[in-house]
Picture 1 (cartoon, rainbow, N blue to C red):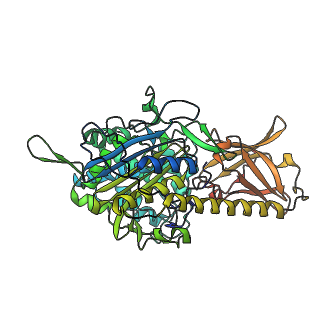
Picture 2 (picture 1 turned 30 degrees about the horizontal axis):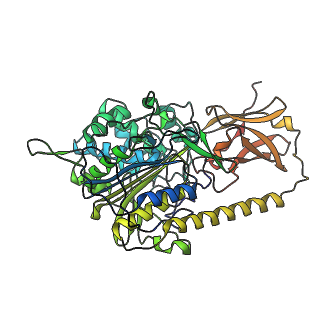
Picture 3 (picture 1 turned 90 degrees about the vertical axis):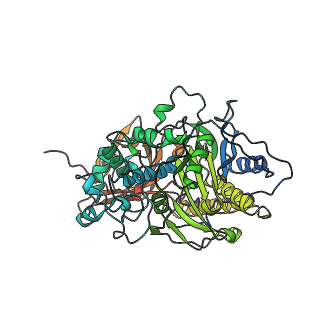
Length: 549
């Protein structure tokens, strides 16, 4: 996955509001006006801000092949543009209609769909989940009983960061219903409603409730109830819908430190948490609806049309779960938040005395960010076909600064790049120290073939170790691409090197033995802190599957 993780890439939905993270930079104002392309219906003023220069510099510094930018202000589209290429090595340019996966920026659509159901009296935010999904069950019976629809969206369930994400990431063959069923086997890391920890699985549950109450799938409901009325005619709710459309961005990841085109990551079983594919033109429309509090404007008869009520709009941007605030790197001192919380489908924080409602998204080969400043009627969306939290945060702070405070001279692009490079260098040094300190001459306690066999985890299920073609391979049964070769590290710890090198998620595999020398359990842990948190290997607890007598 990314050269820097979604955790370290501050505000790519971290466990902390680590706005110190390896992710921010910017550029100065230029005198020449920038030409903007906008949806045909928009009457947009020409900005004197040189967007081209900042985007070009961010693309170069952060190694991003293609970016789409949408900026709306006071109900008008200031910019809806594409930069760079859809795929490295191919000539096709990104434009305002190029589709990008926006991953967790889909969560706002799920929250909005639920808000519409609340408006219609079909559910209430504080309804127990079991009222609408009777078979829903968490690990703890009390949490099962008390979990509300609101709790599904607010990251306070007690689950750890990204817990259970390996049920859908990378692409698995679990069904949505199987994923929801397996929640009962995932142990919490904190008590219920005591702290913030970002999760995806409960948004999948929320998507299931939407389907149950609407009588249609999450995707069909989003199309009919949101995308159609909002005029987002080219936005899709699955990669399958993109088939036949040539204007789709290709995914890109780092492989051995070098950016490369990779295959996309279909996740049809995780809708509600992810699923939306959109472009600069359509996301500009979406931001204007959000900034208008759910209003679509007036029809020909002068009657206001709405997706959801102003009351629900306020609820979505009301703090629900407090988030801790980390001290930023001194180079990014100006990014420090005074408050941070999660609402319903949005992260909330302050910036120069104004509220920001924002969210990020990350899937294999795509990162995105949406930033809204309600008081200023300003919306900024950044869509990329690479895994670079730095490019998102650099452009976020650069653009917010330039539109809210044109006289600002902070070069956020340079600042974020410097901090990201610093953090990456520190992580590389830590990894080198770990390698140097290992007991290189140690041997496994058992013969290598003795580690072969099937291993069962309570929530994921089966993984297998076997020898094939002169190699010892670890394979996750329900995740076709999660296969890798085991190499000895020290003692009874091995390293799995995944065949798909763009995952950037190699992990330690450690065995514990019983007194008789048999294997008691197998545990895993990502090698690098830059590994995406959705590779939640540390939450697995594999035990050997005993052969039948």
